[in-house]
Image 1: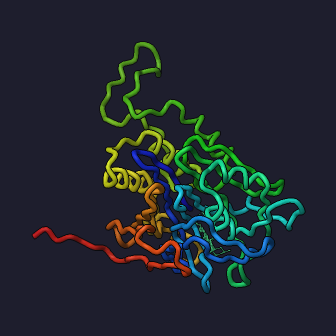
Image 2: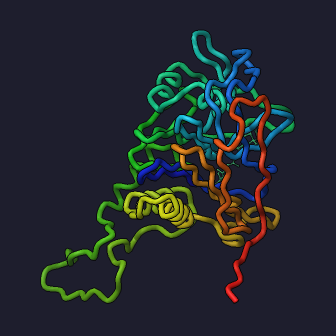
Image 3: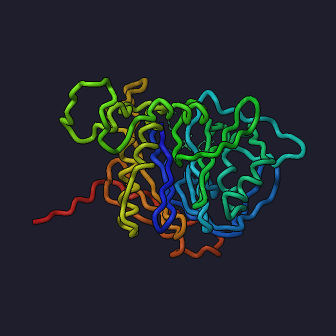
Length: 324
Ligand SMILES: C[C@H](CCC(=O)NCCS(=O)(=O)O)[C@H]1CC[C@H]2[C@@H]3[C@H](O)C[C@@H]4C[C@H](O)CC[C@]4(C)[C@H]3C[C@H](O)[C@]12C
């Protein structure tokens, strides 16, 4: 399971929880401008914009999970297993493989509006990166400071949905996820008035009664509702530290602790990392399951006109500040 979200204060923030049972070897990776890609169907492509994000680098190829470009456009890929279907190449379309979508879009588009225009003519093709790295069944949250969309490639083609809550998890398809919020329309951060029945005295015995009924489990539908509630009601100061801190609080509301989501073979799904990117400034902040201290990589401290990827292995292990 995974959860991605956006958040706006004085800057625009974009990030995600990456929930899985193992790591591919994730690294914070900066791809410079004019970096050469050989797209499987469309041939040579050079990035117009630099980007920073989490990737597994295979050879010199950045296989991004989530990233933001120097113009403030962000994308995150999340599992969409059983629903994601990619198609053979089609004439008249931009035919992009699933693993090419992030570098191609972020390398080409400055804004969400530009991404929408490109996506209107896009077909996600069923070509895997390699035999060892087969197609990942994903859908995507794409956002900038003007809003968010969700992109899903299913049996009947590519769908682009407006996303008014700035959150994405996994299954079911996005329209169903969003519809489920109707069931929670009475929830509120405020203490509710008694509407149960006339003449009944129901005292306010606790704070927080307005959100009673908010789902607390780890299913993707429940995480969607919980993340949307927390993200839509979240308040923070607008400094960088307050905004980044609040963003981590939002995603930690839906994180997965080892032991609570058991898989076959005695494995457990956990939140391997949580990221928060200041999309305006190109700073990628992250924590990992084993390291709660926030670590940051600033893309603008790198040579964005260089000719190679810049890679930072994740800082692992708790950094505990002893106070005495
Ligand atoms: C496993 C990740 C998604 C996490 C997630 O959504 N978990 C939910 C689990 S579940 O639905 O609830 O079961 C996805 C997100 C991005 C994916 C990676 C990126 O797409 C980049 C390449 C793409 C290659 O085709 C496969 C390896 C890979 C390196 C992918 C491995 C894996 O599928 C990743 C890391």
